[in-house]
Length: 375
Image (cartoon, rainbow, N blue to C red):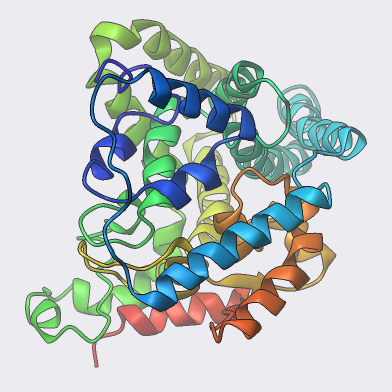
């Protein structure tokens, strides 16, 4: 329909759910205002609207009702309201590391200190942009997207590339052939005990468990280039985004000019690893789902998501991505509320006999290595 193009979440999720029940997904990724807008559109719709979704297993239906009740209780407790002071301090701290680090790197003798501060700032900018892209900070979707775009270019990433990739990942988590995040071959081929996959690996791929950790260091450069190719493929309507991408990379070139290519590559490797070790911890080593599965959102999250355990410092380093289960159940919940939501989710999982997956960041990394190792 004509709505596919302007849809804020991109057209791909709409296409993927054309013949699937998207009720839970819609409720998880849209505000109450959006729900009211949909209701008005359905009343005005001239096409026939299905009276009810296709039959699902009783357990799945029960979990769907229970999940809605869980979200309603979280909303009643105010867990979907952002804390303005927390958001302001968080943004100031991240941008402080970024710009102070850039200043020290370019204009002071404290080059290494500046580079490390700048690197941490860029890594944290990823989580900050993630918050705004999920519309969990400000009330206005337009302002959230504007902030996400600005923060994306500070990292040399285009936000539309990120939204197209990340939104699809959320609605089709770990679904084979649909979730772009798990399409890591040929660099990383997750085995999950598939003999046919093992047989097709070449000499280098059979040693992927050895180069997994060093391979994470490539991710900053890879993601920046992938966002460039995304824009180039849509250049007719994204010429201005190409200009912004070039400008952001020109800033990095100016910033590191005079320090040598190896120094920049070290920065890129540290940033890639700092983000990659968190991103890969939460989904990649978990279950992969077939396209025709009938799991509820709760069941799918339980099978495909893993939290990162640790102290306050770990959660800050991870940008609260460490609360991955809670985030996937309520992606529009502000990160400052996820720790409050966690006990509710743990009790919910216990009540419905679901496994709450939780490991240290080292344990998550070792799980990835184990899934990549050919035995």
